[in-house]
Length: 60
Ligand SMILES: [Zn+2]
Image (cartoon, rainbow, N blue to C red; front, side, top):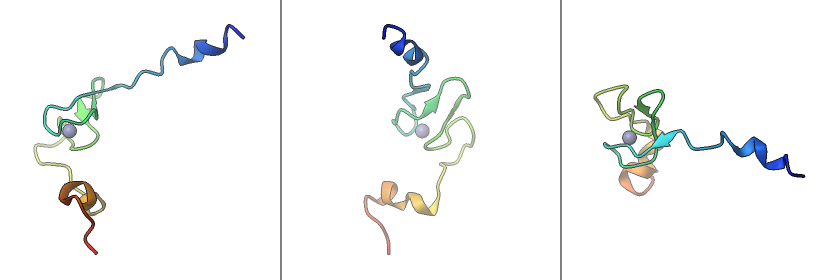
């Protein structure tokens, strides 16, 4: 029973708060944000399926 929690030791979220999009999606190891692409591209990462996040609602 006591060893059950040992697997949780490296479960920490690798992401820190992104200074561009403000989400906790900036990967401190990879030096890029998985949400907006900060560190990877100077442009905002954008996909059509992200329109919900960007516009606050879905376009039909
Ligand atoms: Zn970001």
